[in-house]
Length: 355
Image (cartoon, rainbow, N blue to C red):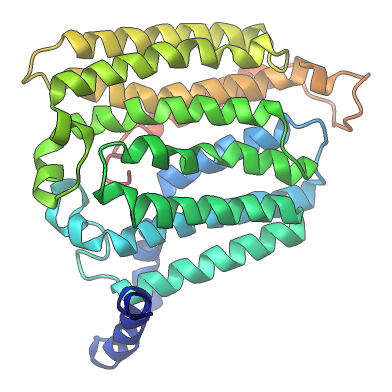
């Protein structure tokens, strides 16, 4: 109980006391800071993968309830980001890439962030339960709990395998989306979970290679800090080698078509080439790690956009399917993929401070 009071109740009391002495600020000037706490770019990626999970499910959701469910998932992802920034405010202030976040800058107090995150989390879980089903709401609650309690509060500061185990939270959104549509879990969303799970370590380790000094100063045992560059690049290559064949499973299992297969193969080849280039790079070569990090964001967007696009011709959308769906325009695949490319490009810019 003492730990609970120190960790959660004390910041809330501090926030209430701070309102007495804090200069009055217009709400409109603080809205961008509260939004920044939600890690909008990371939130967008989670929502997009959840949306794909929902759309490839064999049950087409009601448009209104489906929209509310996606909003709830977005709010839940944002809540996880807020609670992550609440707890990590001390190390965020030490690291250059995170020092401009709202809490280290003094724009938002830790107590306010905690209260905001808890309200968002509760509202998201309740909203998803009402709009979809209890199963999806439970999965969303577990995702938020795992990211905050298991990854942020425990693993991140204890083990260099933090992003490996903690990556399960970031891999769950397509499972939540599928459950929101069907009320259950099938092998298809679990394959999508596995793809994101294997993608996460190369993505974060590529970022942390160029930030090893900052992580060391903050006392965060990221793999480059504990094991060094050579061991980290070797692990990145191993995960990348495993990721490529796993990314072909949606096509092999029959819930993705040739467009997805071609996209997964092409993007996987580039991913592997960049991982190999990083493995062979010099100790002081920062560009190789940066290239892999930036492409890894585009990689996941393009992979899931291709899966979403190919859904229009997959077995889930066939007349024989029990799924009720609206007609898909013939121009939709090309338009969807072009939109995903533009979105992926825009979200590779200035994302390092959010992860």
